[in-house]
Length: 166
Image 1 (cartoon, one colour):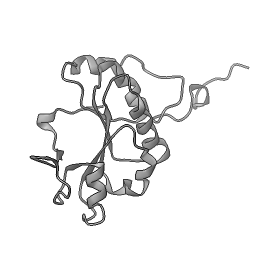
Image 2: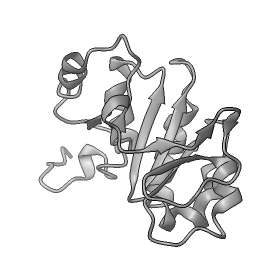
Image 3: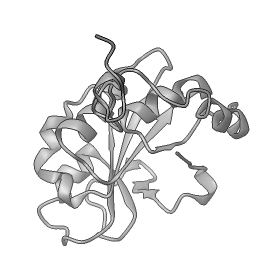
Image 4: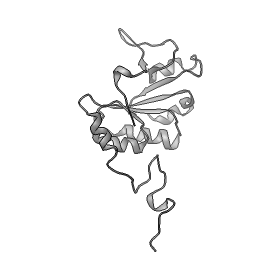
């Protein structure tokens, strides 16, 4: 899992003095709100590294046609107890086969990382009070899982090399 710090992130939002720019200029590594993306998607040239910030109450299936043009999708966790972005990540990876980066931001805590990884999130921007060393340890707690996930779609009993006890 990639750990993202704001200071070293190559992705930049398009905001002016009064909030998000309604029609930002086309350039690589722009991170757009969903409204900005809808405003520019028909005019921006293809091939630009473009990212979209998704609110956690949006149905990701609505982005299906746009996914080939997106390199990054940022999923928001406004509260650590709000898990809707887990479902968004799972749908992006398993149903829509999104191959770009899926990043979790907001109230992202160390305890959430193993499940985020199993749902298809491959980058996180953790809450400021969280420790990266503790996060890396948390990702190594469990060497395997019985249940299927986006990384291994078969449960343990259905994987090659597993003996069936009849």
